Image (cartoon, rainbow, N blue to C red):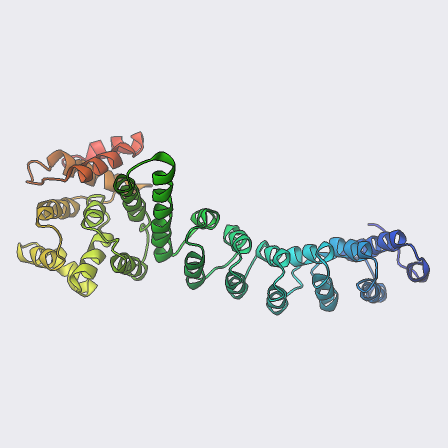
Length: 383
């Protein structure tokens, strides 16, 4: 262990030597001893008093040396950490970015100074609380918000994420950062898909000379594919909120409802029928799974889905009733494959007439499942 070097001589040298370089060296030396935790209680008290002198030093390099050496020490006196955090960027940013001594009250004060560099440093912290995230989102600064959303240690509420999408509907940086977050609320994820789709449509028309109608068709198909994939493992409450949002914005199409069902996503289908038919979810489930002829037909008609879709819906529900999860790893993917293969190999016999786009979509989904899953699915055909 390095022997502590604080002494009365050190203090006198620090206070009397006019050289900023000497004071910066001394600042680093005292801070490193403080970090080692080897000081006696009296030496520690003396070090803290020296820090309080140093944070008022006229030379930036002295304050900078202090901040760089104390930024990750949780035992720095709060007043010292806060004074350094309020300083010029060279001094403040290391403390703001790394110091756990600063609390949410301090950080909110710093956010409200409207200095972008400090706001970015706060957004980069290892952990950012929901309250601080809210304050950073309220800045409506694209750089700040992008850094915040990129930070997987930032807790960002659903309300704040929705505001981000409100404020940055055209920002590819923000959309990209949000798309890479580990988990998004369903309503946010679905809305993000829709926003990205509109941006891509404009790019396709502008840069590739595609007719707007064709670009819309291509993006629409991709958007539906991604949206169905968002729902795995979601609660009824979250799913209901997302599907209501889709319906309110004209994105809950008959095609996406049918495709989800054929992929084995029964919860998506059940909630969609409840929303479209304006029926409580528990009632919708009873009607959908009625073994007779009346229940499904009644809710189907009330949902105003195309009449041509009914045979496919009836067939898919029958197949789903006869198909089980195997309980092994990736059983969701294998279940989907078994559903698709049985529907696609038997749809002619079942009286189903798929639209060409829907048929192409479903065939493409089968083709993208791993080969290992294909063998598992093949062994279950006919069961």
